[in-house]
Image: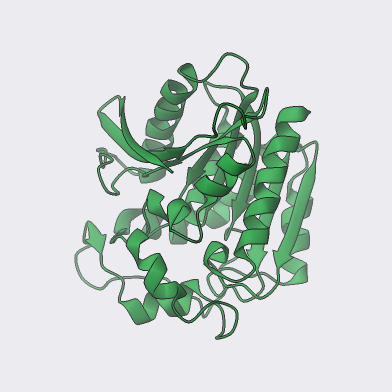
Length: 289
């Protein structure tokens, strides 16, 4: 069972929840998994009953922490100039450093795990260097190109701080076709729903074509990338997967694949459990290496 926490960072705090294995189940010299949710969700994304990555990681002997990114739930939305991403990265780096400080001395290091915009931030953190030992990064729902017909969540008029995403729009963007998920999955997953921080979506749309390729090129730890077969937020065809794979020129180990029968939020689909098992196995492999 997960527990909630708040960690202090310069300029505010980060909230989150963590799942810890029982002492007799804990993997020796294992990874600390730190998960970053996407836009319009909170850290609960990784702890929805029946879809909980935190529970699965604990069962595998790993501590997994899901952070509320700045501006979500009780995490402070920092003041920022031209880039909210840079402010996010500074807060997340500081928060993870504090969490790492309290880990058992035999923990091997941190494996970042991110979904969607959280995945983009995980890649940027990994590319820029961290103040704590980074072992690897696993992302889902983030690639290089956004389909021209994909959802952009752009608003007309003055930019709001946050935007509520209607249920039907969220389901269309986050889920694959009927049959790829249980009929009640969108309702069950709704406990993780949050208004999206508008500035991060605008920055993603405006800057990722510049930031993304450079981030992929600079990462020097093992990388796992997963895209749902029916993702409508990102291009996810064979050509795009190959572009991502070839961008990871400095990573010592690369694992890029498409998850069948899944939309953007892979975790909530019928293939979600296998997807999470693969992420946890990747984290354990990073620690053992």
